[in-house]
Length: 447
Image (cartoon, rainbow, N blue to C red):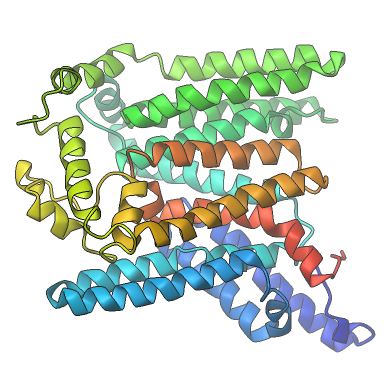
């Protein structure tokens, strides 16, 4: 952990610094563990990190005032407040929805990234542990949401198709998080299969790795999220090939790398071999897809493809009226009601099933540029940290690949609007900014 300049040579002050640092790092680990397990507890971890940082380390936070992510975040929050205020003036009957949507953006926004990155500078902990805790929380949620008293019937429902797995997420988001988890397990295979002194430990970690792949692969398939399936098929093979390429640079690692990929790939394919289930999901939309390909967009069926196209048309009709500054947060449900989309089905939709369209509708081109700029900064800091040798190749691939899956899936889904999506961005962004924040604070970590 780090040590304040004022505490050097002062045992009592040094002791309190270590206590505060310990509490902050505990909050960091607590947040990572519950980021995909329990939203309320994850928020508690973020709040505790923020409170300790503000009360104990105001000077250190002030040193970050010129940091671009912090500046962009504050600029976006100001824009959010102004846009929400204008929306409540224009649509007073929607004030409650507007305020609630604005609060969600503030809570899961990029300020959490800044706070989390700050606490990562206060510890020497390997960032792989942070990602491992998030994975443990995700798998733990899946296992705790299974109905173990009737596990056979539940799994049969997943396999035969009438039941979509959710485990407390939306089915689509479950598919997205599972695909990202599979990517992380693939590129970080050495963390599980590295040489260990005890053969039993080597076997145990290998079994753990395969079990995690099995759980995440099954969750991806049983979510029946076709967009997540397609995204995984686009991204995972690319990173598998890159991982194999890195392994072949060293002849002695070639066999190990090839073996790992073959075993891991075969195990994952065994999980996605429910071809009947996949065929059911594709066949269900076949008529709509054929109608769209023929150019007939009138009277589309109320299946998922037809509903999405109706949502996208509603977005386009309203957004082009206010392209630069948008309509404000919390008004998407109103737009879908006006367009008659919610009348097509018993389910009420509150978004356009696309994070890009959601951001553009609410905040316009100006707000979209701010959000896009923050994502670009995460990518830039990741590449800079890797170039300086402060980020391992495996973690770099995990962040870039995870963001790629996230951003591709966001074309036809809304992962950014979920709390878990915000937490994912916070974790990846904080890891990417760790080295940069350490250089700004100019304070090396000590044991």
